[in-house]
Image (tube, rainbow, N blue to C red; front, side, top):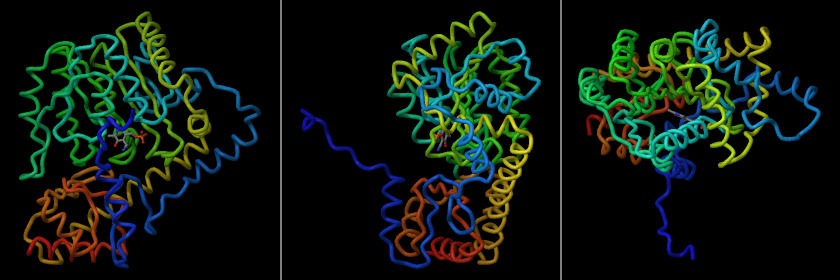
Length: 398
Ligand code: PMP
């Protein structure tokens, strides 16, 4: 019976990785898949994670199922990290949350829950947004619409147009926001822009849905939570999907958090029962391992410090690489002003060049990234940045 289904084309990013592997050019550069890489192109296990693994090895005495909501220590640690230690929402017990299988799992659980509330819910996503938002939210039954976000010509956020669009969004509609390090553009709202957005959310009554996949990769763990924390303190209701894949380097362990902030404690307990029932209908209990590691790291001051230092090292490396790329492009005599790359945050930037130029870079210089011109900054290195800048310079002249 499955022959009746159409064959689907491969994911463009995974197709790019396959093409990269087959390329024999010793100077090839991979700026495609969104994982952090060190100077040698590796994605190592963080030291804090290795140490937590040793602790867990000693501590764990059974592989029996964990509870449907996940490790409570993990949930509490993550909520403090996201919302801040002194969060009034936490003090007032207005939060329902479960450990989820990755940020993707969190997004999907929350989408299913929103469908339970109202099957006709509309979710507004930024144009552009992370490509996976569409299946994760849309396949659950939510209707997706876009709000203007990024202008490729000026390489900047279209904030006025975004606000004009969101002013027209109905009460009860959902607005998906990237907490920090916007994927794919790297262009984040300023604190003043978050202030205006939070005021609009309060006034119009739309439900903010904040996706936090890169906390600590922009300006710092605290700084990157500005928008989320402001919204949490401003509105009655909010949903949050968080991922530990990038900032804990726990990609394959699939660890994330799905949280709902409600208007009062009673509603939070209703939401808790519903969110667990959604999870039950998909996978029952979350995988234990990654959440147990994050719990150990966040609860132990010394280990937490080791982790924070490692997050800072990853962040600083990406900031340095941004600057190096821009400086090297200037050295190559490129006319186009790429200084916007220095303002963008986190792992990604849109280079704001045409798809034909992206293809030229791939075909003539073995530099691989997606046609939208999104590059993984962490794929640049001290060793390849000059080659990369030369390739871009050549392509812009072609
Ligand atoms: N949201 C965004 C914006 C992301 O970029 C990612 C990872 N690429 C995720 C969520 C989910 O991450 P994961 O499921 O790997 O934890």
